[in-house]
Image (cartoon, rainbow, N blue to C red; front, top):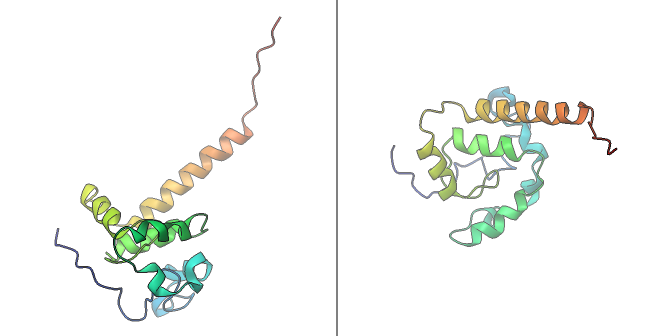
Length: 134
C-alpha cells in the first residue's frame, strides 16, 4: 500500500460536513450525509490539526448522526488528513492496513450497522423471562 501523504483534502471538500452540497458530486447522493454532520459549521482549521490535538477534535464526532457515513467516506476516498468519523488519520491508516481487502467501506459499515440495529430490535422485542423464586 502506498504511503499516505499528510495533505489537506482536495479543494471543494473542505472537511467532513462540507463539500459539494447535500446532493453530492454529479447528482449522486453518496455525500448527502454531509448536511447532517455535526461539524458542518465548525472551522476547518479546528478539524485539520496535527498530533495529539486530533484526540480533542474527535469529541466533535461524539453523538454525530452521520459518523459512520463520514468514516466510510474518508476510508473509501483515502482521505489522509484530519478527523473523519471519529478517527484520526493514523487510526484510519491502521484500519486500512489491517483490512486491505475491503473494497467498499460504505457497504461494509452500512451492513454492519443494519445487522447491529436488527439485533437491538430483536433484543427489545424478546420477552423477558424471569425465574420465579419459590
